[in-house]
Image (cartoon, rainbow, N blue to C red; front, side, top):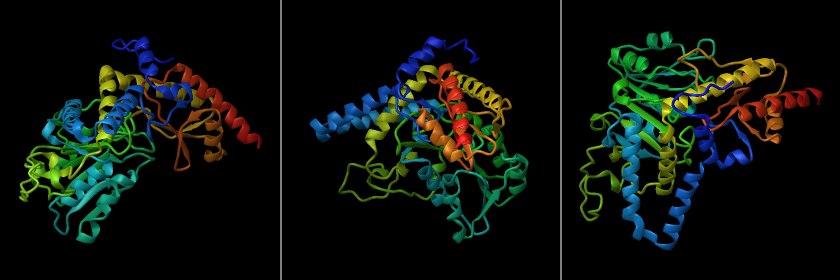
Length: 392
């Protein structure tokens, strides 16, 4: 059974669930891919659409103030300062700011796990033509090999970049441990936070993270195309400005003054006009999540995934995710012996169960608004889908 948190009652989780319209149509276990939007987020987007349609840019100053309110709130959410936050398009954008702007020298190297999501590989691999070596460390038993990561670092390592939660296995690292590892070698630590932010708490100053990026469309329950980039002060001065535009300077509204006096903050990397509708939607989603707090949300999600693992074991599934305390996450990957995962996913979708296929395995990723009924419905549908696939 799913445990009841002392700080957040089941009725409160029911309230969260009531704000997720997706629950009326699907059992949605796919937040590690693209999350459905909460009702308040839809309302925030619809309000902006109405304003933009009926009032045009007369509302622009108000929208700009809302963007700065979001910057302050997301900074507080991760323990950063507002000036350390850039509002970016996605995780790839945030990683590319560092990859393209770092003062590389031939012979430098970057260390990453080999099984990272492509967003945390391609920006670094593009540096090889400049003489920067990318050391891709193979996994061990399907998960990040922390010892091998350290062995790959040396005096020429400039960046260690690792996902907080592995998109395939769900293995969750301890960011403080990896940050300390990077710093022992005089390197900087970049955290790809997209699979953890919104579920697990973090304080980037306490953990001593140098750079962080995450899109908002997964566990933060926001729309695609609106993400955040954290750059520890004053490291933005070290990076060559990229993604530069009229809004990158200290005097953005003096259009007749051409002077590359970059903003004294991470906002210098934002370039030109922002995805206002996306960030206002993401702000609404963030405000919803802050009602409950990441500590309670993480306990809830881990309870849900533990219960899902019990169901999977009872059906003879092979679990590919480690569930040890401290490394488990909201992602559970599994397979069913001798069954094609594509056909199995299609059979589940016909039963209104939404999950993903990743590398010949099925991946479930519930959020805190999911409940026991969802887990039971998933178990029943999986049993039926397995029987269907074996019979055909």
